[in-house]
Length: 495
Ligand SMILES: Cc1cc2nc3c(=O)[nH]c(=O)nc-3n(C[C@H](O)[C@H](O)[C@H](O)COP(=O)(O)OP(=O)(O)OC[C@H]3O[C@@H](n4cnc5c(N)ncnc54)[C@H](O)[C@@H]3O)c2cc1C
Image (cartoon, rainbow, N blue to C red; front, side, top):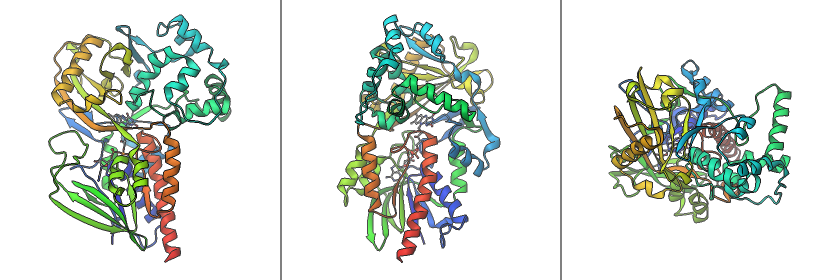
């Protein structure tokens, strides 16, 4: 008997299935067997964004190229899956980052003194930055955009030169529209708890010293990038093998409805051709289903993008659907370019570079993948990943593979001076790529949590809610498994 349906077979859904399996084995879900869990995935294959293609010695990640080693939940999962031996750490080159500014690549110094001596900001911009500790803290608790926060604290030039490309690099986002509380909660906390960024970072550093660990940067937790010998796709492949759940692919969930007596009905349309022949994993809304089906279960985990979850719930709970619909995705395309090292002309030692929008270039940034993960290219070859799109370039959602690769080649020529023909070109396009946490995101999450309390057995996880990284998805998967156990306990008590 199916007890749990997980909608979406990306890292969030698969990790949840695996964590539930562990709970079953630990006796926390009496009467459940791993096969009572079904993962229903719209695309013809599992993994969501976490997929790695292998081709003639190249490792080509569809989406994430790794995760930082500072999230205990991910390291725990790696161990529980027996993947520790295949973990690969980025080389030290990953610490060297560049900015394409005023027509050329410039290193971004990581130490404050070197940064102030660099030519990234004008004297005026540096003075404004140096005044940060004197800026009074905003303490009204109201949300604001990332740009508004940073403009107040460090000035406009810092925003347009550094923050804008950094936010594009992580969120493919728009600094003017992203919520500070939703997207950069740690930065918001520095001001709320310590009165400012410099004061907060110094306080953090003191605390880290007391606890004998390395301090994090202002926006996040620091950490070293890792992947696996076979690329990040190894994580979802192993999860799919080890989660013990029934796995359905090519089945797009159309509706999730309460059935009374604590049961849920999950209706799906099977379309084995959905997404085939294209690397755009965004399921086609208008794809004609070949067949339909349904499962009835005690609990449902929505591990698909929030907008898909909204579509599945809208028929019976429009208020809940509206909360979910507010998390809009930004389009993103990754163009992987492989070159012979001899033909390759230009700097390529480091993590790569970002491009502020004011440079007037459509590419968001370029990762020098084979510099920090040398095993992802054959010996003597160079692998670049060019990112195009983002919230401020909605038109990029309509790019064809050919247009995206021509754009990538033109921008690589302009920024890095690389004019050689690549030996390899692969385009991975996502019309609905990275979820954007818009103003009011935290408030909406609270409303969502309140609403779900009244709907026992319905859960939402994945990158639409509490963080967009692989680490966030894994951490939330463990927590979701805990909520599933709690909900099952309540069923037992009520039965
Ligand atoms: C280009 C790119 C680069 C990135 N780089 C990094 C990085 O370096 N490090 C990092 O930590 N993170 C990175 N991320 C973010 C990270 O990849 C994602 O946040 C994470 O993989 C999301 O996992 P998920 O399971 O929540 O969602 P997804 O991977 O989107 O999985 C959701 C699944 O649900 C399925 N689905 C959708 N609708 C339905 C439906 N109606 N019925 C059934 N199934 C449905 C989809 O087909 C999909 O497989 C990157 C993302 C992208 C796009």
